[in-house]
Length: 261
Length: 75
Image (cartoon, rainbow over all chains, first blue to last red; front, side, top):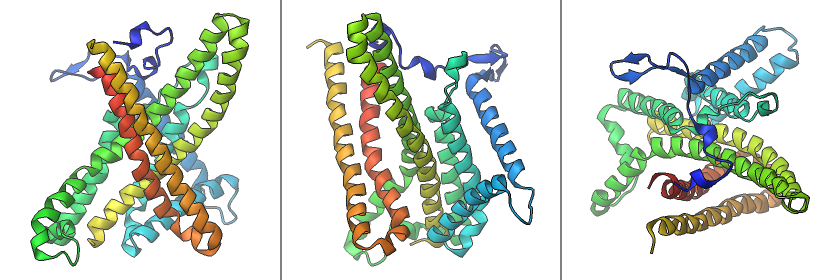
């Protein structure tokens, strides 16, 4: 393991630690309340409070209600543009997905390390993003087979495919369809993990630079710190973009199930 | 060659993939901006497609990162 030699271990921040009931086992599986679960709970509570403040349904919306309505309108427009009129019924699901991922990404970036707390970005774990992706994928499968029956398989043969090409096109389309949940979950998990590793590596440059003396501190530490500030801004952008991309791709896949090609 | 050294060289080579994805993502946004300046009226309607292209180009770079991480920490 190469990581053990480094002074600042960039992967340490992703360690899952049990907080409560470390020895609780159900059917051989440990069900301890971990820091990952804690931050999921925090995200859910923050999201709940955020929505509660905006759902007063005042005739003249205040700032808070405007913010919430901007988000719901945004998701509503996205589904209307990508799926059409029938897409409206997926607004609750896509909206929850988008807001949950967005809040998780942003809460994981909070600079709570200053006061000694350690924010944990649970979207940087494939177990979490994979389950979210499987959720989207199973909605696609269920809706597709429910609505179109076995006609759903025509999704794998695009319109106007010449007959001799079908044996080749069908497996390719099938594989590209089956790979979707992996690529969906992988994208979010890697983007979040890469950003956090990058910040950790840059912070190790700052710390090791200043530890090596004032000369190295000025030469390496200060530019790294300035870069870190820029990367932090970039990470805020990535947090929003990845939540948006996850919701956008989910709605595109739902479009496939809803309207075939 | 030492196994550990080979892994680290492989992880370094995987960084080429990340750089290539940077070219791809830059291409996506660059082309979008180029055509958006020609016809600003049509630009807003294409934002969904812009992000689909971005996501597709970015995924391959992220896969290169995964390969590097697997080589360093798992393999």
